[in-house]
Length: 240
Length: 111
Image (cartoon, rainbow over all chains, first blue to last red; front, side):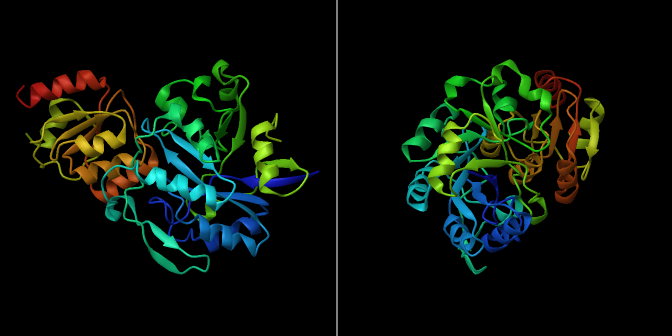
């Protein structure tokens, strides 16, 4: 068994609010330098840069998961992780059909850049990724499971786009057994009675290269594999 | 009525006033879920919300609002204030609840 340092909340230049420097090549290089072993790309409502991200991660010997930060109809953000592109891409197609019917306006929300693994621009995503989908928070856990992935609410300690800010409480009926907290989460928040029994992971939610911080957490695995990561996420009793 | 006159009549806090002479002709809209506001807030109107994050500026610019009023004594976070200055958004505040603020706005705009 060995400890592997991880972060599963990173944005690329495809997220409207992500820095244009957050190319898949740059993110993976920065994560390798910072000492990560396992990382996931979670752009807002899209998996469009995940192929480049997974490809770019290979040269650094990083284990890379394709993912997404889904915006529910309640404007709650949910991290969705998938074992491979074959599972992530159909989910991305599903979410695309549930986006608001308007185009992105880069003047207000920023550009949405599709890249390959070698920093070549492939094009711009025109759909409005900054908005909310019409997918409800109570649907997400089962929906993502049906697509072969795992979902958990993002940065529940923040005062916007979080379960606790927008819904006011944690309801176990949502079906999540994990929750993400930010690195600035006050420890006393986790003592709330409604969070009892929940497990937590930290996400750096980097939108800029300098927000890729030193690893905050690790997972103890028998091997560095996607299977082991998902087993840990589903079964581990503590975030290590 | 101009935004500046609204500031006086509703005793609003000024976080950023880019264009006090701008006319308020679109009425008002109350809401906190940005995706709803994005599709429904009227141009040249007043948006009342308790949201204080950076996306408020983007939504206000997109919908071409005359001004935003943060209610319930909510203050903008730093990124929102910077974005409001950058994008020239009239960003105001009120100690009233969103309902009370909307009632006063309605009276000020002539019912």
